[in-house]
Amino acid sequence: MALSRIAREVKTSATLAITAKAKQLKAKGVDVIGFGAGEPDFDTPENVKNAAIQAIKDGYTKYTPTSGAPALKEAICEKLLNDNHLKYTPSQVIVSAGAKQSILNIVLVLCDTGDEAIIPTPYWVSYPEMVTMSGATPVFLKTTDREHFKITKESLAKVITPRSKLLFMNSPSNPTGMVYTERELREIVGFAVEKGLYVISDEIYEKILYDDAQHFSPAAFSDECNKKVITINGFSKVYSMTGWRLGYAAGPEEIIKAATNIQDHTTSGANSITQLAGVEALKGNQDSVNKMVREFDRRRKYIVERLNKIKGISCLLPQGAFYAFPKVSDLYKRKIAGQSVMNSFDLVNLLLEKAHIAFVPGAPFGSDEHIRISYATSMENIERGINRFEKFLGG
Ligand SMILES: *Cc1c(COP(=O)(O)O)cnc(C)c1O
Image (cartoon, rainbow, N blue to C red; front, side, top):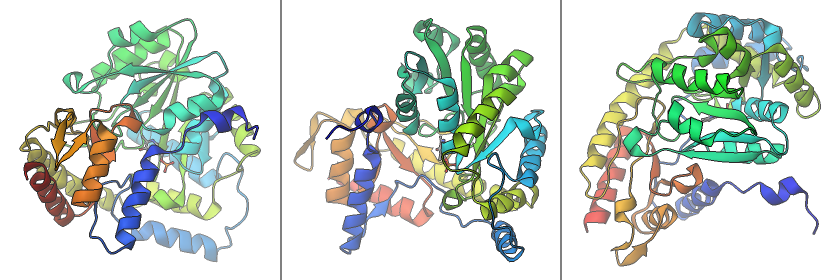
């Protein structure tokens, strides 16, 4: 069959196979403890749900403008000003069916065949596939635990070529949980912009921060940065709204206009009801966010402490998001429960089949030495799961 270039080149989600297998086991009645969740285990706040119900009752059930309902775009501009020191008008904002769609729109607007897009590794699984769809080439910039999974101006300088068009930044990071300081961000993004690159700043975990970590939006650093940085954000993580599908991009009007043209002919505006719920999420009481972050913080400390006590495992303390990303490669090349484990897929598969714990391999995030453990699950599950993990490796 003669499939298109995109169909041939875009990979299936490698994490999906593992998730499917975990589901199969569960369906058979096996007590699988899941650590794969890429979404909060909290319910969408009540005030947000009520706003959606009201939107339906009020008949707000028709197409909205492609780039978003005016009320939501106003609320987003207000949020960006208050939280992020970003001055945008509604014409510089596009609302999409999730931050994922906003990012794809921007990649398609900026990247052509022959261009290079720089992706710091470990990365969120969709970035390379989006670049591939555009026809451009992903260029990976590897980082390790030793540098806390952070790129620097110097490491960036080594991969920039005349074809470099775009840099992805994601702080707080999925999967590493690392957060860049203001100084680090200023240096990296300032340098990228000086070299003529555009920057996608994926800030979807901005409010899920621990200890004294702070969030900064690089588009606010200078006029030059403002012209080159596109800020991405959404509702999925901070407001536990993954199923609602709502996210947005803010940036130079010309780029947003082009993104709107693409969305005009793909999905049109995001769900009208969801958009009014989004207004309430931004403008309403924020207590649920604080409550969720406090609970994540408790789990984070517990899980990292436990992981670091297991021989062969080392884990940095995440400063944001809800993932631990321990290094497990010291477990490779030796037999575990009589089976040889060579990489993150082997380890995750073995743990699922034999210990009934579902982690996510690091390889699809660009780092085979690690696994991703989401702590968006109850403290009870975390305790039971890590007990099993420890016992399985020790026994
Ligand atoms: C979850 C996630 C997104 C996309 O979220 P949407 O549900 O599409 O809004 C984007 N970037 C990162 C890093 C994520 O983890």
